[in-house]
Length: 353
Image (cartoon, rainbow, N blue to C red; front, side, top):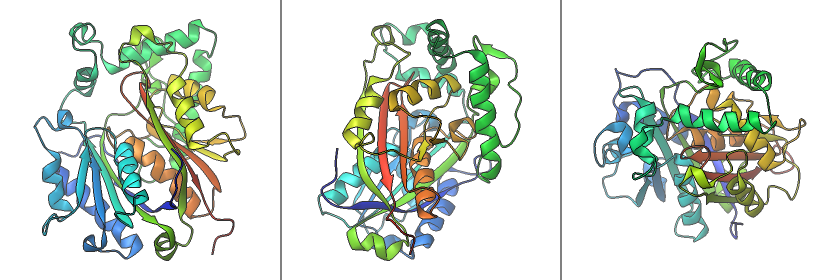
């Protein structure tokens, strides 16, 4: 979908991503991030025109758990607010649409996930077809391994190339103070063939938030806004058996609709929790060696479920803010084996003021 009103990401903040946060509730994990992102703009909670969040009740183990996190936002007096039961990247999409309509000039978007309390691999099976697939209990790693093996069998990659992706991602994360895994990291033992532990994302807890603003309001709040030039999301068949797991047509279609192929990008933040998924995404997005892939380390360095996709948008925007990128692509995914995909194109104005 192409915008008819200029909307930009003007601030981004995230927590330090940790293996466990037993000492923190969801509210305590989110609040410092919200204070930081609002502080970066000078806005108060009362100045925000619309608030939207992303999280999952399945991770929390209780219904309507997102209402508790609203305590960290300040929902009294009542505020215009919404929630998506998925990654926060889709909450950003909803907020972007809200600003396009002119119903608000600013929006706060946040997402969080505590994966540590339970078995994440088992929890994620609840996304699967409840009649034919979920009863077999194939967990998220086993399904990613099927995708990786399909790529190997098709000659699209090899295990050495997958190991190189893991090594590059964790090396890049050495400069990311929020990453859970930083610097050299062993490939480790084979977990589910052909994937090794190093091909898989860390399990951890974390939160992220962005502020959106429209038009001149964005320019007043940020020296170099990251303008959302296009954003779109598409979904593929629920049944894995009718999909070619070596391709991602939904990613390519979302990228086309977002205008990603109109001009080259210099940076791409890809939500690829497994090394094999970066191979699929690079092909779908036509990314060559000249594009900087996941300079933050990506989801292989920190993968707080329900926030990792929003972080890709935030990391891409942050590079635009500081002048490290002029035109960046951000990608988020949800569901098994890249089932649903969102692509956004972010641009900075020609010169940093």
